[in-house]
Length: 325
Image (cartoon, rainbow, N blue to C red; front, side, top):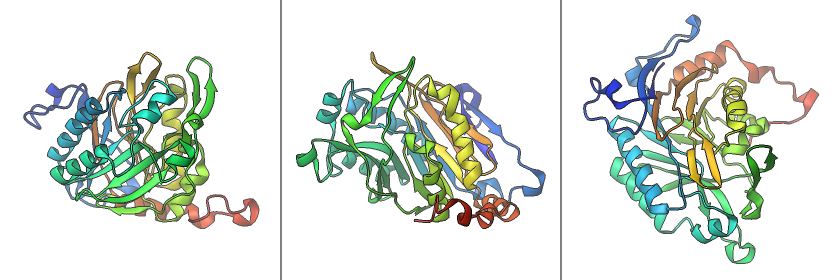
């Protein structure tokens, strides 16, 4: 598995002349169990990019930062770029969140559709503040994960089903339901150039039933675009992502918000890609930047054959938890 960890541009200057990735980046290779070696040359496997940003209430500045990373991902050969939850903005309070929100057919999504066409790659827009069809009645929005193809067309939308209403000492209260409606359903995995992608958002990762349902519906990649806090991040971020990868035997891709968004909020960062064995094969650190990893579906299938956990499930004992969609 060949992957890339974003560190300082000079580390990559001999590999990619003119690399402009913000902050950190370094080339690294990860090991696998000997019995499950690469099934093909790494350069034959699709390359995905994970973008880490610090969103603010300034939507146009956020778009500029995201677009720079997406263009860099395209230049490096990625077929699919993942952006984090709240890539569009992170507001100071619920009133500002509602004021800045847009419908899917609004200006901002149009700019991202044009970006996808310009770069010729798919975009996972990990959490868009969407004014849905019921906006006039509810005056609340949806946290909507939008998947665009390389033509800029919307091929899937998933509205976050688990809302983050928590109080973590030292991190401040979160009341997502003050401005957001929960989504009504999960979405079937979508076939992309990197594999079949199951859509989720941030807090969803704490509910393994969701990941099991997506895996049994055919997902090969699970994605959890996030804005994890500074207390839960060091404690739970990596261990939850690795657990979801191991139990579903899927790749897990998690683009994250990082740094201080404004005076009221900061995020942990550490965007990463985890392979089906549970190995972190690419990651970012604290600052804005980009990491890349190759998706080896041959390895995934080989692992599932050697360790056929889904054939060993016992719904007769514990019901239909994580049943197929």
